[in-house]
Image (cartoon, rainbow, N blue to C red; front, side):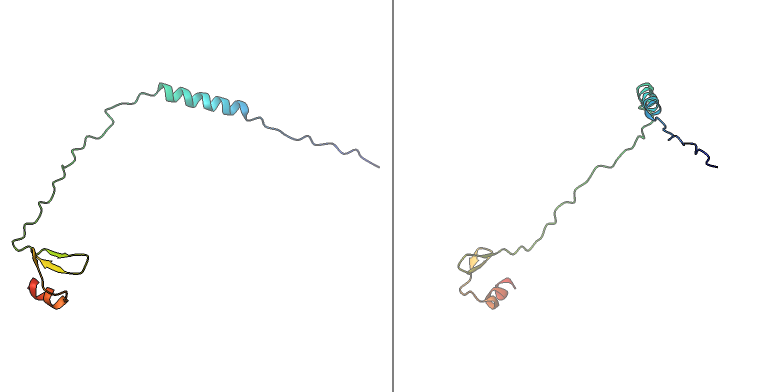
Length: 90
C-alpha cells in the first residue's frame, strides 16, 4: 500500500513588525528621558605648577664651527684637538 506523504510547509517568522516596535520604543525612551545635571560628579582638579628652571653658577658654552674649530665661552682655541678642548673645559 502506498501512503501519500504529507508535505511539510516551511515556517516563516516575520521579524519586521517586532523590529519596528522595538525601534519605536527606543525612540520614545530617548525622547522622554531627561538628562540631569545633578548626576555629575563635582571634582576639583589641581592646577599644574611648573618646575622652575635650575640656575647653574658655572655655565660652559662650547661652539664648534663648520671648519671644526672650537671656542669655549667665547674664546677660540688655537688647535682642533680634543685634548685642548678637554683642557679648556677643565
